[in-house]
Image (tube, rainbow, N blue to C red):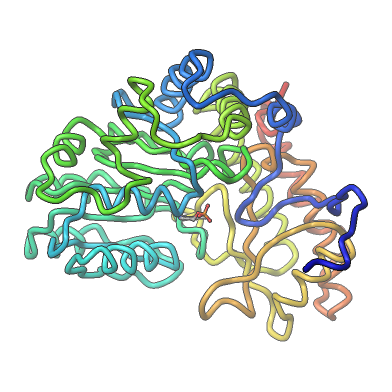
Length: 404
Ligand SMILES: *Cc1c(COP(=O)(O)O)cnc(C)c1O
């Protein structure tokens, strides 16, 4: 029995969301959340589905027919990709270069797959040659990798070679783009990706709760010809296809989340993928210049860096949990600590979607300078801000802010 119910209207604290998700929202996306709901097979809803398919194909850079948004977070996308393509006993190869690759491997194991991991050192991308050799040796049914590894800020840019080896043995390639889609360059058709999923709340710039998913025709064939039904009723791709393409009830999709995802994807469409990627690259490199001028390092080398999430290594004796708490309490800025062995000495900073703008980079650099100075880490006052400004000024045009 509840006794102390707080009946006051909810006023969550104002935050600047610069962690590895959720990210800042465009006011247009927030507005979409307040529009009145529609029923799950209202013709108006089904028309929005048709628009979303087009917008999702653009975000994924694909001509795949099947492109939908699952009801669930990025992890639901991961679960759907694996549970539709894997049958118990299948041989599966997972490339891991951090926490989310490990999650892929653990999830595949729970589906009864015989999983072999190819590990990269945290901070490095996968070695495509090692992936190829393992794939040729084991002849898996499914290969899974992460495009943007949020735990380390590393991008797997050379996917095409892994895809080629995967297709040599007639396996399917699954790629996680939860933290990269809409922020870091990827062209899933050109790369040869069969199954790709993402999440709404990172670089796509919507609230969490929807997981974009696309399968090419080859992957759809494999799913349709499974020996056993898909273990998850909720994430069953053939049933979801009947819902998204023929309007047959499957589950009660959240209309406000669909509206918000549409608004976020329209923002991506208006900006264009190329400009959007370039904006993320510029703001990330300005941030990198800023933290380096403050005497800090980013874990991933520039050529392997993800442009949406940075792993910032803190000086000896400065604790990431303490820095995170001070940024949140005193500045209202959210960043995350590291994962695994990096937990105490890394800050994970997300500059994604609407959050990838100079105003946010400058706020974080300014706050971080104060926090580091207070902990005895000395450098010239204003050095980080000046270095970031110089980086933006070196570009001849202004692709750094989200809107003109
Ligand atoms: C955040 C993230 C996920 C999980 O997404 P949730 O929305 O938290 O369920 C999976 N993979 C990567 C690479 C991520 O960054």
